Length: 616
Image (cartoon, rainbow, N blue to C red; front, side, top):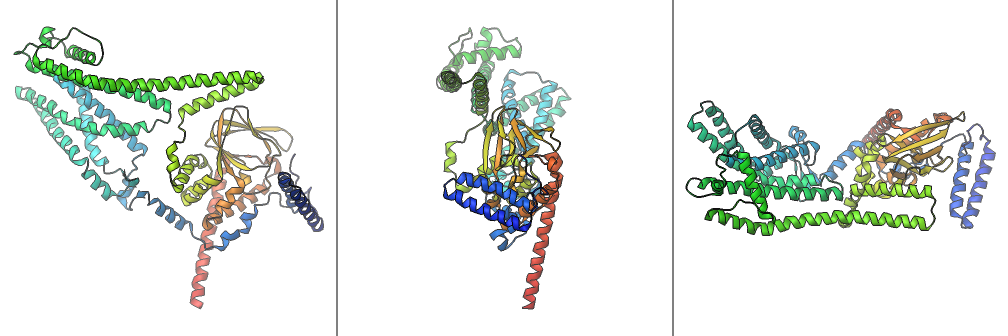
């Protein structure tokens, strides 16, 4: 099952030519008989013997040494590839160069996301605390600290707003001048109208609080009233929540979040109604009979007054009742208006919550029904118990994974070909960047990776205990682990079995298949947990890379260096698994040498062109 060494397969030139002639004759006969698959496999194995007889144990693929049509075309430097990539990206990202450009962050960057989440929390805090001022709650160290923190945050937010790009008509605008102009025409004036008075009244309240006079108490009340201007920021809360909702990757969690959002909206609406209802009674206290007087709550704590008003507000949205009743025409008119509002608003909120609960129930019932049908099917066909358990365990894992993931929406069928290719590439690329060569291609020629994603890259799933390949099988793909863990076992030179663990974001499998047609698997790869893999087709990889001359020169140089290294490794030390922490420095050296060779080649061509022009 092992490939013979070059010493054992050595032969003279005459015998090698005879072997080659007989190999071609057998291949033609097999093709004429229609057995294409047998012909391909037999030809592949005879090619191994033929190449080994010439002393080249792992010859590189013909594409990497011949150069093909790509070598004949004009070559470009990698700097020009980068420039082309940037030019292509300019179609979707408008940006300039300079010092300020380094300070601009993308709208969906992690730093901006944390900043927006902090802003959403402060907006919710203001929206709950500001209406409570009608109950005249005492100030605490916590409330003063939060007010100061919010004031500093929203002041810095003015600066932060001109340091983040924005999206308009599908184009991400990153130019500082356009960002400043956009902010000046949207949120700059509202932010300034909120922050400046807030600073002025905060400074005055700090100075007047030291005197303790009656005028200072009046000023503090004015400050509390002016804080209602902060509620303008509630308009920002909608798109911040929409951004946070985009982070939910599963339908199940999105439905739960929608239920929580509806309940929160219901509570906030009743919070505002309770505060307004108490404000109406408090304004009329002393010259009109109010519900505060009827319940003798004038001397009660502000917390109890708030809870009483909130309880009454909730009863207007539900069939519940309580002893609190309006006691004058203003209170009665307000109660009637709230009942009308509740008739529409409560129905909408309850309907949304009920619809979300029905979706959750439908998802759960569908899962139970499908697994019940599966158990009947396995039992009806007398599937062995061990296999039945493996099937059910894997499908339970796959079902849970499907709940936590998002399937491709039907809207994606409307995408243009280029956008569809970019989407496929973005889905696979993060798992391949662990390899230095793919990381280099990502920086130098993103278009090549997009083509690979369409034609050469596929996905595969493994259940626990599934084997991906066995010894002596002809290798066809390079593998990257997306999820799970795999176990690799092979026999070393002394006949002892050795083991390796293959983890995601660290290792890759069967890289030589990209560079040599003679690679066969040396061991067995088995999944120890439910796993997903990205596959790169070895044959298609070369044809796609060959479309770009500059990238082809880089990859072909890397391929030749890799094959030279592969032939220098003792046969017993070869493995299908490439441990990233062990081989990455060496592979990066191959890439740097290839780039250096390419630059030297381009300089020589340029010098020859100048000399030829001067001579002519």
